[in-house]
Image: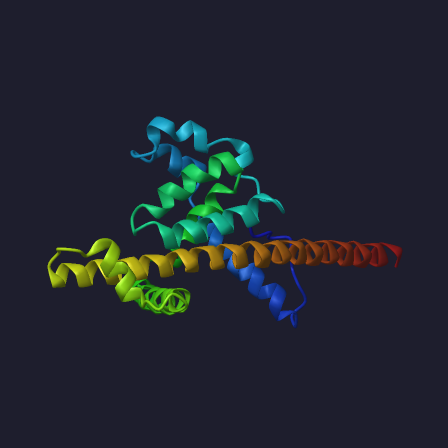
Length: 209
């Protein structure tokens, strides 16, 4: 993804940051060769090796980011990458981008996201149920916890609230990721073109002298 020919001016910190991030992605992204050798994907690897799923363009990259974000929050650890790969097929999202983006949730960040998801789910469900005179706890108790031990009921209630929070996070981050990556891609291409044009003008001036 990173272009070695793209050399932004020394003071253009934004462009240089994007270039460093692109270089980091190049190191972390799965390759077609590694995916073909993966023992879990080997029986269906040919489906993920289609060239159109590995092109970086203004459509496939935002789709890959949005898909990776959604899978990262909705699917438990260990399975989100595989789900993102499967979903990349019908929507023609960029496979390596989708795979890397799922790592927004990982063993190091998951405890933080659990806490955030629980608070989000609790607040939203309380607001929504407030108009009917019931709290989120009363609603969940009525639906799921009848005749069940109290400790098991507590676990089910908190898990349901947290899962709802993860669903909200997945949708919000997928939408934001799509919009930001779309504008970021256009900005990157624009800066890249400007750099090429500036280099060509400099070469023409040097040739004229």
